[in-house]
Amino acid sequence: MSGMTVREVNEAGPRTVTKSESAFKAAQDVMPGGVNSPVRAFGAVGGTPRFIGKGSGAVVTDVDGNDYTDYVGSWGPMILGHAEERVVAAINKAAARGCSFGAPTEAETRLAELIIARVPSVEMVRLVNSGTEAAMSAVRLARAFTGRDAVVKFEGCYHGHADALLVQAGSGLLTFGTPSSPGVPAGTTGDTFVLPYNDPQAAERLFARHGERIAAVLVEPVAGNMGCVPPRDGFLGYLRGLCDKHEALLVFDEVMTGFRVAPGGAQELFGIEPDLTCMGKVLGGGLPMAAYGGRRDIMERVSPAGPVYQAGTLSGNPLATAAGIATLEALAEENVYETLEARSAKLAHGLADAARHAGVQVTHNRVGSMLCTFFTHRPVTDYASATTSDVRAYARFFHAMLDRGVYLAPSQFECMFVSTAHTDELIESTVAAAAGAFAEVARASTDPIGERMAT
Ligand SMILES: *Cc1c(COP(=O)(O)O)cnc(C)c1O
Image 1: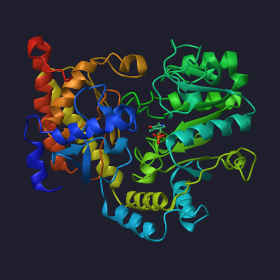
Image 2 (image 1 turned 30 degrees about the horizontal axis):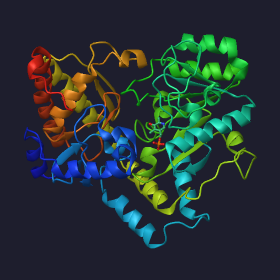
Image 3 (image 1 turned 180 degrees about the vertical axis):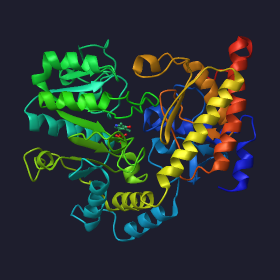
């Protein structure tokens, strides 16, 4: 990015956000909470959500004209940065030819081939519109294939908002899921078991009792929806073995990790092949696009090849398909993942040093270009340890960074995402901003009167 942006991100102090404030008021009149997806409303950190006017590379600009180095990246998809030339050109070209036909196009086959070439376990794929749809469809397919009803998920893992998967924290071991939203009938989640992440013994015990009822184990191979929580050594392999032994399907939800932590996702990185894989986010390059795929003998049960129904008016949409192809092709260039790794490592080390220097206790978890600063001194390996984080300290840090022109996720339990557009210069200015932000957090914790809590 330009030198101007770097200079601007180094200026500390609250930004003028009057246009965002009035935009938020207008939005709240006509949309629940003023947003179309809850975390955008800044509920966990307080303050005014920034209404974004535009983005370019690693920088987003709000409607008041403030620039921010963006580590949200639309919650993962923008691995090439915003308005990347090749992606924009591909979308424009596709749009000029017509937005949607509801008939097959050759580009869909091209994207499917690119996915299959890259993701080790995927032999056939179905394109859908969101990660929610991918996970919901994978569960239906797994139930149909095995003739069993129960599914297993892990505490703190998110698989979209389909009823059967909208279950979070049981008390841990061997509990049946209880819905985490009103409107989800208990009957719908009654077949969903919830286990602690990274705990092979708990999975072993569950399978010993209920193995013959379990259709699938659904897991984020790197958990990214409780902050970043990597799998312990052997955890994914253990699940693979359990599923084989009990003839259940292993489903990796790689909506976040797919095409991000490695060209072939977490399954390539850890060398474990699931039976089915959910993909999304990076796959659409910022347009609504997701997919589920896997073993040919399983995927051939999907309609119209087989009896398991799943459809979509806009599935394989030409614009989204074009953006996906352009993104995957750009990611195939030399050294992309090496560069992402180097920049992300530099950022994580810089943040850790800055926190140490300010005397703030944090734990950093990182896998490739997904990372998280947890405001806790404990190692974070599961939901229980993630929730030892001081969310008030995070909120303070978040606002101190925003005041310095760095846009982080407005919640402790989300990842930071690094893109190829995050230059070394931008990483350095982010680390410089973090030094100031951690110092503010340290001051607030020793001086409760001076505490600046957003409202
Ligand atoms: C984001 C996400 C989803 C949901 O995808 P949507 O496109 O928001 O429906 C599902 N699973 C994981 C792991 C995700 O990170």
